[in-house]
Amino acid sequence: MTNSLLPLVYQDKQNLALEECIKEELNIDLKKLLIFPIENASDDLLPILAKECHVLGAEGWNFCRNKREKQNLLLNSLNKHIMKGVLPTILNILQDFGIIAEISEFWQYGGRPAHYIMKFVNIYDRGLTKELEGDIKELIKAYAPASRILDFINYFLCSICRLYISSRFTTLEKCTISTREVVI
Image: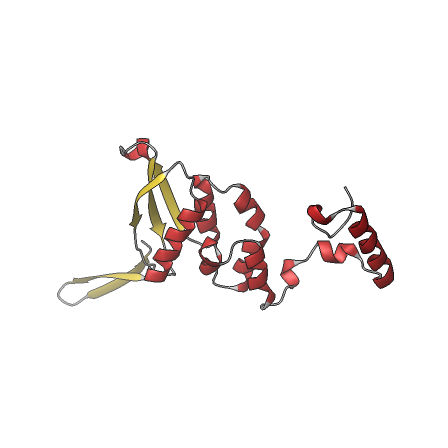
């Protein structure tokens, strides 16, 4: 196998010779072109790389909230596409974005054969919007196996907050007030 930038289809004698001449004339270092550090990519280049890696849109890009999540998605896009068609891949992708879900197969909940359900345990800091729900459904379509049918999706919406519980005990002349923070 040659160290060429040309696609395998175009690697014939004439094209390889032409590429060799261009490399010698322009002094091109192939190592810089073959491996691109995504950590150094500009914000304008990230959507272009996402399109090339087939993760633009509901396949992961719409779930990203910051540059670090976008870079991680691009770095792991090959592994996600290798595992495409396996139910745990959906859970792994959602978990990368802080969304925890569970999948139950038909034998676990008494459903019809080849069916499954999804339960979203937390969508704490995102909130459930119509766009997010549409993106989740598109992600499931993109990564779910063709041999399985989604019955339904359960969303359990929770919020994280501080809840103060207080108590008061009074006698004739003394008053005691105590509070404590409870994490639910």
